[in-house]
Amino acid sequence: MNHWQRMKGESLMMRRMRILNLSAILLVWPICMKIEAQENTPGTSKFIDHSLLIAPDYPSTWPTAPFPKFQITHQERIGPRSAYNVDVLLIDGNTGTQLDVPPHSVARPDLNRPKSGPLGLAYTDKIEAWQFGGEACVVDTRDLLDKAEPGFSPLVKAEHVERFENTHRRVRFGDVVLFRSDYSDKYYLPLPAGRRFIADVVDRKAPGYPDPDPACMELLGKRGVMTLGTDSASMGPMPDMAEDTHFAGLKYGMIWTESATNLAALPPTGAFYCMIGPKHENGPYGEGRAFSVVGGTLPAKLIEACKQKKAVDLSPVLSPRLPLTSPGSLAGQHRQVYLKIDFLYSEYLDMWHHAHMMDSMAGTHLVPPSYALPKPGEQVQYSAEVAGWLKEYELKFGARGTSAMTTEQVPLDWTSGQARVIDTRKLVGTTDKKSWPNSPEITKALIEADEKAHGQIKPGQVVIFRTGHLDTHLKPTPDDKATWVDPLSGKSEGWPAVGPEAVTYLKSKGVRCVATDAPDLGGVDPKRALMTYWAMGSHEMVGVEFLNNLGGLPQGKDVYFLFAALKIRDCHGGPGRAIALVLD
Image 1 (cartoon, one colour):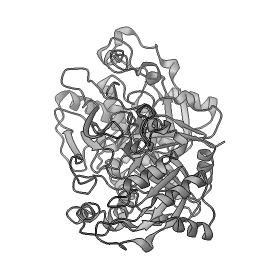
Image 2: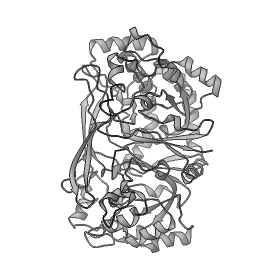
Image 3: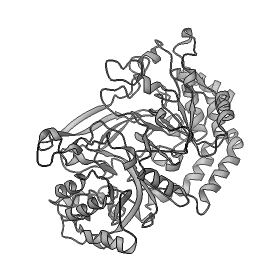
Image 4: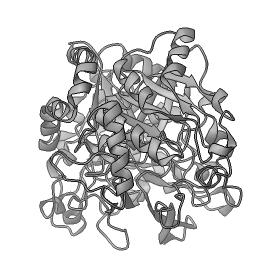
């Protein structure tokens, strides 16, 4: 665990106490205390983060030209022009902790080349959800750390896997084999010290990171292992064996994590490991978030669900052809559209490497408390209209809170948990056309009616509202108007949206995360939407927006929701991917 992670763990309760206003404390204090006690009870399951922090002053990206350097632009800050903190990202798939899939080395079948095959079409958006997770099998390679000449990687060989097998058990389908050298824990540091992570290796000033050779990959492929991970900067040995190792594994349909960290927190076997990230269209690799679940009975259930392929993908694909970000209701209010930026051509693969410029809330994304709340002690000057809304809100709901909790500070177990789906499709078509732009409100009464029919909401559940909006209306240009434009302009009814009273009620039930398959939780009325986000942030709740395919979840089954946003420092949104595992 690095210094930043220790500080996060030590300050979490302190931040909770500071952010919650008095009325919220009186309402939810017994529930919060109950949840804390459950989280800290020996033998219960807990989440462990295995992702590197993404920030401009860290060695987050591959350091050679023309790979773009990561950038975050705080396009809007809470103030007279905006009631929200809005960020824009420039990010390449080779950023931070990242995912490789077969088209990274396997050519498309239509190219008819020696390395061509059907897996050349298995892009990040095509990989099935079950393959992202499995049982962590941690292969200890620490004896190789720094044991090579500058610019060369010490090689992880088949013997390392066999050594693991002799001590524990044979690796197999359903396992995630993780190579632990502690490389990223030691060398992923702020720049300039962070040059040792990749740049000094490229420049042959320091020994390379340990990596498997092709024979090791062949062994794992023949064992049926489909998912790997390494805490090295890449899965390819330096300086000239990267492609051979990549193809040796990817030709089997493997996927893997590069630049994982904190693998020391895992037992050799038994933990559930998962790596998920934004669902970029035709992506040969992608930035992601890696984590594990250890302790208690949950890991075994999650592992078995992945092994049985009982998984459902809940995120729409990210494509420039789709309306993934809000166009605003007036000129100049639109969010950054999702752009694909080609920067490096691979002749053999006939493919462009590409980065993306996008709003931090493009596609499936996180809503942290700091999205709509100013920092503690920060003096905010709202517009006259928003200031009036704030007075009205505080008269009805109490003082609006403050928060410095940006995306990287949101605990992973807040955005994962047993799924509680509440069907709100019956609200569609219930508003008067004269009231448009307006969204049907998801009220406390509606939630209570669902509890009466299906049982009480339990603390720690992720409450997901099924509106059907994106399943029905998310379509590419030119048929894209029904997603955002028509509802925002009053040409059609808005999507069902959560009201602040409902947020307060859910917090009283011990809910920390609320999700929706609509574009957002707030709806098309800007006043009510802002009050909803104020309520969520003030109660230290988070949201997951822009899901789809909720109809793919089996009814009457125990379903576990998993979502993780990219670990970007000081981000007020956070793209990610949501999947669900069916546990029975």
